[in-house]
Amino acid sequence: MKKSIGAKTIVHPTPVFVVGSYDKERKPNVMTAAWGGICCSVPPCVAVSLREATYSYQNILDHKAFTISIPSEEYVKEADYFGIASGSDVDKFQATGLTPVKSEVVDAPYVNEFPFILECKLIQNVKIGLHTQFIGEIKDIKVDESMLDDDEPLIEKIKPLIYSTDSLSYYGVGEYLAKAFSIGREI
Image (tube, rainbow, N blue to C red; front, side, top):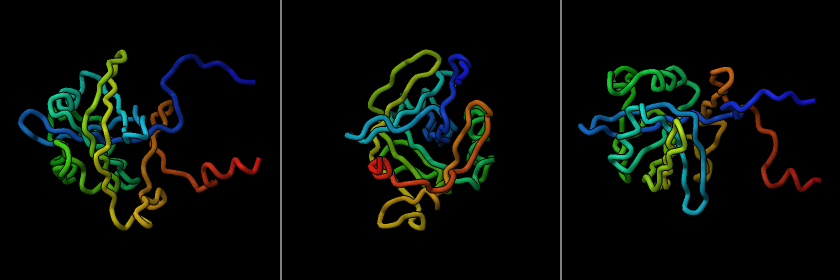
């Protein structure tokens, strides 16, 4: 039997997205967000939802661009810090010792040390309530070469963080189970 626990912001898992943007002075900034995911195949798009109170919110609107840097497990401390500190108060790159890189295709920075990067042009924003969803067309993806197999990123090498909203905890990716769009054909 299932028990109702009410309407909450729980989905397992959620991504750990480190959203990059420039402020008005072109200072690179990043923030961690978990409300997001792929939202369209053609054109390839990703969505991330931010509160208006965040420093990144206006930056994205001003520059019509953002990046998403996917941290690996080894950067859990830095990814968490990016969600705790505000870019209006501190230079997060300087505080963590990580390196901002100017995107070659959109007007936003990304985190050099993180293995998987989405470079996105803002195509739409939708105010939902407390959050606004920013939809970005993915203009390019950059992946550390050591984490590719025939130009395909390997999740077991990237080791992305995932987030559990109910326990406020970070996890790594589990073991391989089956090939999608294949295992179901056995039924």
